[in-house]
Amino acid sequence: MTIRSVLAAGALALSACALPTSAIAEEVFDAPVAARQANESGLQTAIFAGGCFWGIEGVFSHTRGVTSAVSGYHGGSANTATYRQVSSGTTGHAEAVRVTYDPSVVRYDQLLQILFSVGADPTLHNRQGPDRGPQYRAAIVPVTPEQRAVAEAYVEQMDNSGVWDRPIAVAIERYREFYEAEDYHQDFMLHNPDSAYIRRWDAPKLTALRVHFPDLYRERFRTG
Image (cartoon, rainbow, N blue to C red; front, side, top):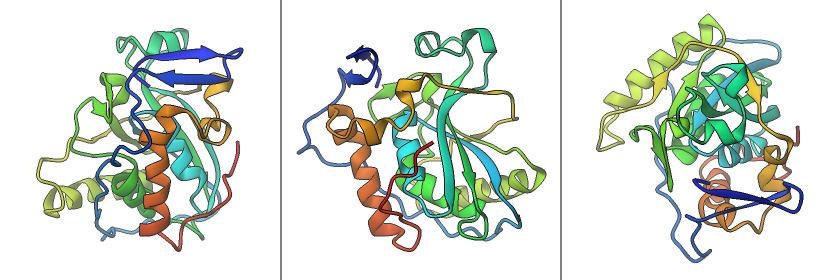
């Protein structure tokens, strides 16, 4: 995803960093069950950043209780919220995913556990997988006081868990405007399963989700 060429009228992207399907998957972590569980009701919205938004969107699109996962940009201004500009790493945005979910099925703290078990390495600073730059930072963006309280408790818990060999680098960022990414980025994993980048870096995340969170894994990709 570091270098993408949009082909076929912008429907298909390739990555110079993509490796063959036989390459091993990224490490999967046993992120702890949250000690501070979220107390929410009714449909809720959350924003997460964890490197390339294709994979994070794909993971949450296969998570039970998630009704929508949308790729976009968070942390910068409207006039630079385009893929070409964000990819420069100078706009302040992070590639992010806006998740709408039903907390009676999946709680906010469970989404955090999924994110940092199979979606992103929380110890990496401004990078994930083959992608480098501040636009690929791992970040939690609470949109309610309850989410912020849960996120702060969970980051502290991760740091003290002993699961990771390095300090937790994930940031808890103040909510700013979320800008939806271009149409060809939406549901990218569903529409481009044979993309070299998807096969190498993102398909293994779904396998890990199915294996490690069987009760929250949904076989069908939830579009939109």
